[in-house]
Image (cartoon, rainbow, N blue to C red; front, side, top):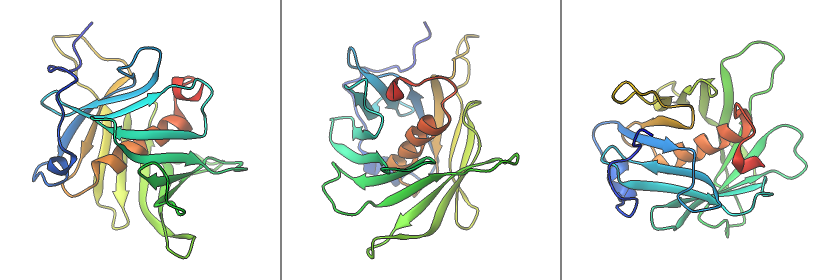
Amino acid sequence: MTKIYPNSPISSTPLASISTESEPASLTVWRKSLLFNCSGFTVFDSNGNLVFRVDNYSSTSRTEIVLMDAAGKPLFTIRRKKLSIADHWYIYDGEASAARPRFSVRKHVTLLPSKELAYVNHYGRAGGEEGVIYGIEGSFSHRSCVVYDDCRRQVAEIRRKEAVAGVAFDGDVFRLVVQPGFDAALAMAVVILLEQMFGSRVAALKD
């Protein structure tokens, strides 16, 4: 099997260094937990250091996912909105101890062909959505997506990982490119939600 990361998973990268880089950060996303008998995601930086983890212990959990840093500290808790017919999710800071979510994410629903996938809304202090701040377009099943801000500036991109020594990676291993100044943790939260909404096969996180 082609090696996905060059370093030990124990090595880690501070999140602050990703956000302050002057060049885009290229992360490798592996749709697999490093823990035995868990499903999830493991994310490495360009040097092979562990950046993010999602370790889903419960095979029946479909409504809550926790995104952690390399040390296991919760960064975001992602919860599906109760009694939601369409895909509608909330993103909370940390372990979701706050009464209000920080973001609201909705799947784009249409009967017509569309490259639009989902929208990220800021959740205001008054307890409601305050308008779209990010849009996601492309094809997640082909690992070709772009995240735009409200001024149509590209802030993150999902793309296929390049072949190594002539060996191609399948869709479980791909790139997440994050532009300078954009929250890499939020970009990864978007990846998790796209997997929930558009996974090309039944995902382990949804089993």
